[in-house]
Image (cartoon, rainbow, N blue to C red; front, side):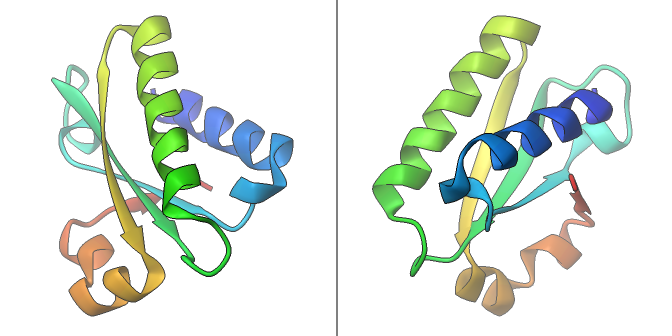
Length: 99
């Protein structure tokens, strides 16, 4: 599953220049079990390079397409680079990069 997510993220970043500056991280139960209830994903973005509307559209697209293909939900957390730096969410959650 992690390999599929990495491939999807790489394709997404290649296909749309708007997404090339986004950082994707995985955390939660998928890292510790083979049968998670959902997949926890963090998307870190620069609010000066992509609008909140575009990031929300991306989240909706990812959620729908992943559920349609794999029948598992994505729980997607959106953080600006400033928010992540302030919260230290990636380190606290022991998230891994999908790149």
